[in-house]
Length: 498
Image (cartoon, rainbow, N blue to C red; front, side, top):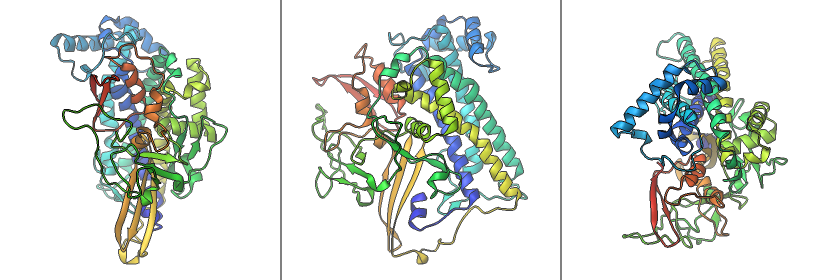
């Protein structure tokens, strides 16, 4: 939407801007909580160890870090019995694919039991809070109400089928529920677990360059200064200098990607001139050793000023911190103080994981404020949700180019569209996991995933939980499997990450 709106110079109404912020904001909160508990927690939490926990001691631990009402001895005893039943029946379900008993696990049994309890609670919680998407987007996932020029959510205080006072009140209840869980469960758990793994502030730094497009416009998408989360570029971990984003400095290589450019594999192209022409040269059955000196990935290699960049919550929080975002600075400093680590800890697997939690709280706190802004607009009689002034293709220029940018939960997401004679001539996307998971470029520069693994200690090569900790800290989004092999080509283990 934003790419076409940019190409056609369409400004959306305030209500549409707020509704889009609400849709995206609750997605951040739900997505980050799901990631922490259901996609990343088992890298740090030993579920089976929870069977040795004392429910009374677990209750004391939970009550010492939060006033969450469910933290009773009886409650944790019930969770322990549930885990025991799973184990005895041999039906661990979502807990089956993990390295139980691995020496890299460090949490005491009581902390493990607390984390498992909250894992189960988060399953129920996320199902409720995301009902906001049903109200504002028709469904979740793949919302149906985004349209060029605004949104298709009707706003009418007098209509039961439109966004009215009752639905606004419902949204506020859901957002209050979201905020309370983040404040009283997610953040305390994050700090408690991180306190046992402080050494991970020394691993997983990656490329040290960070890119954030910024998002949640509070005036206009064109007004970068109005974004709640600011835009910016940081090089070499230097928080004293934040550069403004210029999308024209973004290019993509295919040197080590299973694609080809007409001009050859050594060139880099801006997305407006980009091509997506597959050229698979990888292993054939019986799947011999992958040659990383050649092409080895289905991802292109995006670069900013010809440098690899990390995107995502850590990039956003670093840019916000360096830009002077007061709430982000307050929370970052609080987390560093509670963990007893210095600012250098931010550039790590631990820092990346903490940044996601900080961002979740910052956005959760903002949701009700945006909802109140929407309610105030409706009360004042502003019911506009769409700008249809350029809906007719006959009014479009003969040729136009647009850049649409947003910050998806996983990071900077850009769409580039070239419209010619009323039709799309070229469309290219550079998504967060392409930035973070990119292969090497023509200069041999590694992408963030690859660089972040350099120097990581592995206790057991056949159970490489340390690799999972760092890769999962990026929250990868790839519907494929990761293959771990030794230099001679032996596959140790195949890990499904989708």
